[in-house]
Image (tube, rainbow, N blue to C red):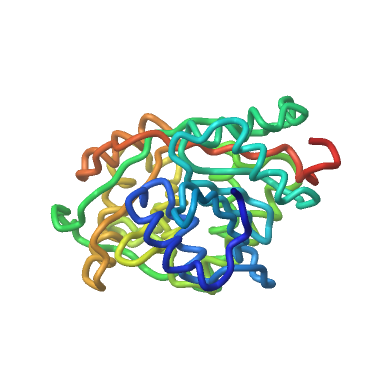
Length: 285
């Protein structure tokens, strides 16, 4: 049976997701930061539970800004359709998560088959921060006078990773820049001459685990090991404040090699699927 979760389900949801933390970070982070249900925050999430008796077998979520997430081992097509039926009328933009599970949802939306801007499987990595060898840190928090540089970096990152295209790219880059400056998760990495080289971010946090994303190195500085060094430097900062584990997924072979060099090990596959434009379920699906 599938039912919508309430605030009293939070502890049970966390206990179910924790053993699958590598592919559940957005579900866990949103639950920890925003609780259960809708609010004005873009990451506020409605949760749906697949139960047999009193035991949870799956958790499905949809954020306020239309992103889908799921943790349901051995998910079948019929159950994916069942989850989607519970959010008919909701406008969605994309989905991320365990590769096989997200694939079931894509198959459950055949009318959207030709409307995916991005449908890519990326290697998923984890690292025990106790094993991390910290480099010399040259990180700084972004400031307001970094806005123009960051907008350009985010715009290029969105294009290179295939997450956005066309007119929407600049808008998303501006939003991410504002979030980076207002928040505490993004770091700018500088070279020995103190010139900015790239950036790295925490895009999800749950308990003592973080998920790293938004890693970008200026094109003229690539191929010199900067990506690995700046991620390691940020993780060393996080370790000092109590973080024990990090996860991330790699958008390219070069990124995968950089993360492997600093100790990350591959634990599976992660799928990122983004629609060309937002779609209201039930209207075309």
